[in-house]
Length: 133
Image (cartoon, rainbow, N blue to C red; front, top):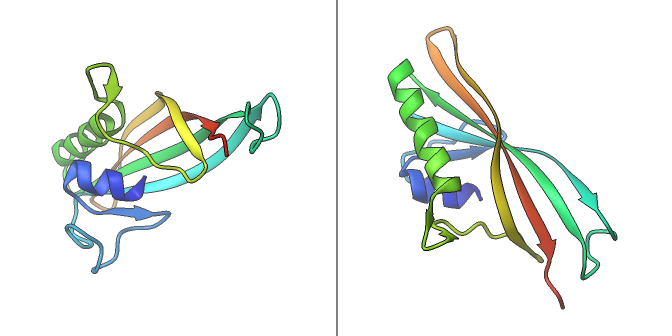
């Protein structure tokens, strides 16, 4: 997912922290996104069973130096996750052993600023199902 966000937005994406100087494609230069895993809830049989589904909650925090720039970055992240073409999602999300069968924007907290750094928080729910072996 982190690689998909970096590729689709054209900006680096950190995992739980800001990207590093060696992150591709833009290093630690802002604007960038940070991906946070927020947990999984399952329904039906245990995850791993052939009929199991789960809801994977993730957060994407866009970081920039201006309000306009952070809104632009949040728009790029939203488009990366939710844009469809011909009924299928444009950008594939790969999770080992699972197939992502649905995506939805759960909550947007919007812009906040601290010490001149702007952030924009979005939470998404991915619905996944176990792939048969």
